[in-house]
Length: 98
Image (cartoon, rainbow, N blue to C red; front, top):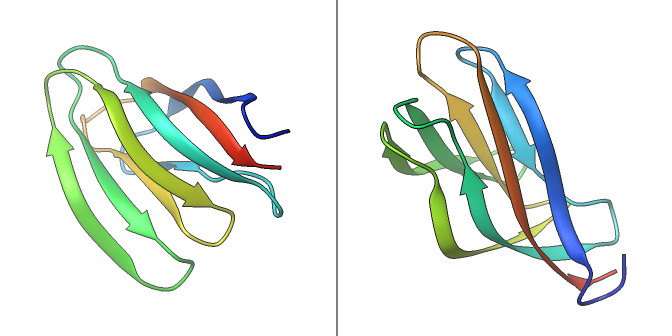
């Protein structure tokens, strides 16, 4: 996990009402560039620091491309599936610190 390496959150099934955390390892920092969501699946985006949560976006159409969400192990983005059924989500970006 060196700076410049790809940060990948592999596709995984997220049940309705559950989260996928975009949280790098304890010493790493990353920038999320893309969030992949099934077309037509509703989801919400939250910024989370382990205690406090900020809902900052939602969609029911497609994922997010060309974003710049800076994440660490202690402060990160969470994708909440609110589609009504299980859905597969994923994300990618780049490590800025390993």
